[in-house]
Length: 105
Image 1 (cartoon, helix red, strand yellow):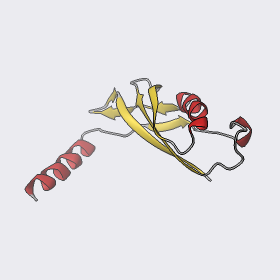
Image 2: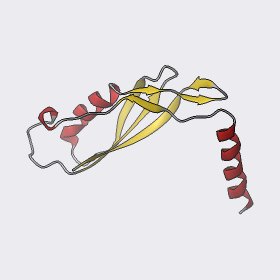
Image 3: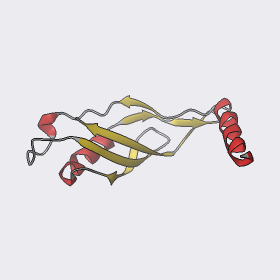
Image 4: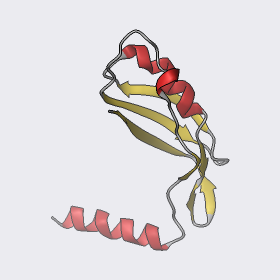
């Protein structure tokens, strides 16, 4: 129990010390006409992992989990186009690893 409390306390200290999470500037937009026409039904989740660099650009994007491999190239292409306000730590921009779940309904 003591270790869990310490980790939670450390998180609070970091959050008060000028730390912020990345924020999307250019959103993720994917339209039906951009999807492969192999299947008419797209319902599920794709999980993408990537790095947000100090300038807010996406790099090293990769699919962690996908319900339809035919969507992977389109999703990766769109994720690479997202622009972020970078995460900060102690008031300075930092590179972070990020995971984005994308739901299709």
